[in-house]
Amino acid sequence: MTPRSGGPDWAHLDAVLFDLDGVITPTAEVHMRAWSTMFNDFLAARGRQDRQDGQAGQDAQAPYTDEDYFAHVDGKPRYEGVAAFLASRGIDLPHGDPSDGPEAETVCGLGNRKNDAFGEVLARDGVEAYPGSVDLLERLLERGVRVAIVSSSANAPDVLRAAGLLDRFETVVDGRVAKEQGLPGKPEPDTYLYAGRLLETEPARAVVVEDAISGVRAGAAGDFGLVIGVDRGAGADALRENGADLVVADLAELVPGLLAEREATA
Image (tube, rainbow, N blue to C red):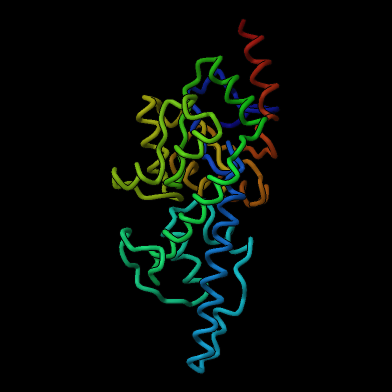
């Protein structure tokens, strides 16, 4: 569905499927800090070990950066993000098992190490949702639009609870649900399609709202009625090139159009 000038044609849309981190809550910042701490500690330790072993350790000398986050980690399931970053540096670790402890030098071990870091930051600092996102969410609920969260994170319910929004969403499809259902993560569309089925909504009448490249690619691959990109750092052009029909800097930009359509049909 092509958006009308000024925004989506809400009259032809029944459900909105939101990513969480960077769309509803600024937890992407918490995730970014947790990833940075974990990877840079890992790279520094690897560099020290390489020097002790008499190796150059070039793969461990360049720090992990925000560019690495957007290129390899953003929007992906945790272990896939670890594997993608390690591959970009030519670092080969065994995959391990999700039960690996955070001290394990495996893909799963590093992913679990990052998850521990995220939990510590969330418990300490809490999180507040983006005001514009909350405003749009409340307007959608008033209109009777069904809403869901579709997140690669296994922490989505905890984040929503901390933000006071858990009861607003009819369903939450997060990393744990994806694992239980055997659903591949973004950029595959399966988690979004599954959420749409739970809401009894056809993809053509649903909106995907994402801030990640992998997320807008998932929305485009699922043939959803509309894919909205929220530019929190990935870049408007990159979001459009990967499948976003419409890009905004904040979801508050969509509220006037929603209100105008409600008044026109009142």
